[in-house]
Amino acid sequence: MTTRRVYVNGLAWNGQRARPADVHVAGGVIEAVTTPGALPAAKGSEIHDLDGGALLPGFGDAHAHPLIGGLEDRYAPIRGSRTVAEVRDRVRAYARAHPDQRLIYGEGFELTLAPGGVFRAAWLDEVVADRPVVLRSSDIHTVWCNTAALRRAGLLHLADDPVDGRLDRDPDGTPCGTLREWGAFQPALDLVPAPGPADKTLALRRASRRLAAAGVTWVQDAWVEAADVPAYVDAARTGGLSTRMNLALRADPHTWREQQEHFRSLRHDTLSDGVSVRTVKFFADGIVEGGTAALLDPYLDADCCGLLNWEPAELAAAVTAFDADGFQVHIHAMGDAGVRTALDAVEAATRANGPRDRRPVLTHLQLVDPADLPRFSELNVIAVFQPHWARPDAVMTDLTLPRLGDERGDRRYAIADMLATGATVAFASDWPITRPEPLHILSTAATRGGWLPDQRVGVARGVRCYTSGTAHLAFEERTQGSIRPGMRADLVHLGADPTGIDPAALPAVPVRGTWLAGRRTA
Image 1 (cartoon, rainbow, N blue to C red):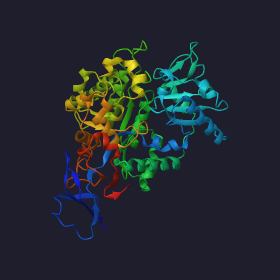
Image 2: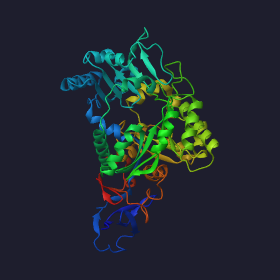
Image 3: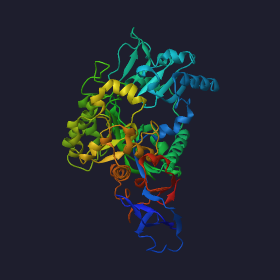
Image 4: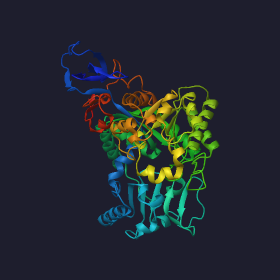
């Protein structure tokens, strides 16, 4: 029987603002939006009292990593450690509690815990020396290994860095234990036993529940290996997903030509209920904090401009090839040279493949050269920001600013400038790198912790980035992004109108309910 529900006694978001309204839902679709009391509830309707709160379209997270977040509980619990000593204590305790594990793995240590973000194998050797220890940083671009892991991965005596990675070294050239970017750390990650299919499915269920509790109804999983796709399908088919997900398959700069045919076989606009596979992910560069984001001018603390993970011509060729196959491209680009290289690749694909509704995405965009800002709207590139990073914190003061200096530092995360160009902007969390709750992120976008006030984005504009902007990225603006008749009933009930309170108070606003096509998920 078709479920009917009427949301009363609150405000409804019309795409621009929240206004008093009753919202009638039938069969997972918004049937009517009326002035309060104007339309009687149909017979058999459930009445949901908004209690003075606000009904919004479900938030869309334009860049997150649900599988990584959902799996983290399986490993050494190092996230949240405040010192290197605390990381080591947690690794030691986990190793003692798991004597039969052949390798110790953990996710989420902060680069700010060690001077310059350089971590030494000897520090881990002192707590676990009898088996490999592999730890990945919270930003996922750095791996810290003990000596046993370096030896097992064939990195201990590696003389030259790979083209798409960097090994931090002691004065004698020996790798010290810090591996940066895929070319350097993939051999170490390959040592980590892969979780089984059931573990992945359970992790996705757990992750989607966490996202739904935050009011998220759609998420761009921004890094999926082809071997993991069946877990998403299984989770969706068994009714285990509380959010819709689009999967971005990671293209490898060394093997992308071999990947292409397999990716074609996986591509589906709707692979299973709520899951699609229509995007390919590229890492154009690394991160500023690790010195691997690609810059137009050298870092202040190193005579280099960072690291491009792809040769520019090769990136352009790969983006053009996957674009020709009908994929949306989603490119990690952090430094201004990385951004320019990614824009050049999109421009090459557009020129080679001709006009179509491709909606390419560049994400992170910590540093964009002013000359490249207009290119986003000119090329119809969607700009995805993680506003939670746009605030003063230890990462900024201890690692970023010493490497960039004040002039470049004051051009980072120029969200307001990007919006002023007319480009489509969508917001994201990058969870589990940072927390997934949109209200926390909207608060930071509006306040920026007092940093660069001219780049603040008001809450109403931020809500549009988190709803309409992400709906456009998802090719779903006809079914989500505002509350009006005919739209899919992917909804979130907030305890207050987010645009009507002090932005600093947004994190305290409760999420009172989340619905996916009318089905309650949180």
